[in-house]
Length: 131
Image (cartoon, rainbow, N blue to C red; front, top):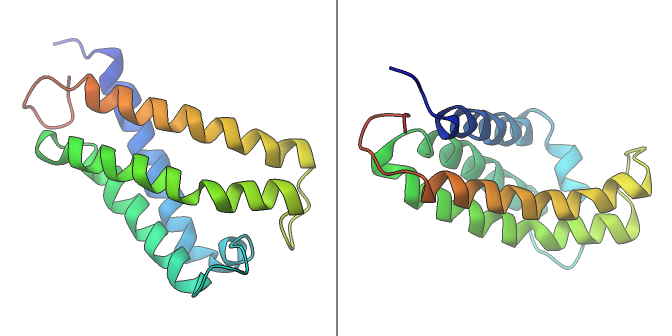
C-alpha cells in the first residue's frame, strides 16, 4: 500500500519536535539564555517546553493522540513566540547568529503552526502513523 505525502510529513514533523525537545535537555543553557528576564524560572520553562515538544512529537504519530498533541504543539509554538521575538530584538546571548536568521525564526514558527495544523487536519484514518 502506497503512503500519502501526509504520512511522510507527519513523521518528519514528529522527528523534528522530538529532536528539538531532546536538545532542550542536552543543551539547556542555549535555551535558558533566550528566555526573557521578565519570565520566572527559565530553567523550568526550558524543561517544560522540551518535554512538551518530545511528548507532542510522539503524539503526532498515533491517531488516538494526534489531534490533542497537535493542538498542544500549536499552543506551545504560540507560547514560545515571545522568547523568539525577544531574541530577534536583542540577540541570543552566547550565540553568534546573524540578526536576519533570528528574524527568520519568527515566520518559521508560523510555518510550523501551519504544518502541525495540516497534519492534524489531514488525519482521517485510525491506523498508527499512516494516512
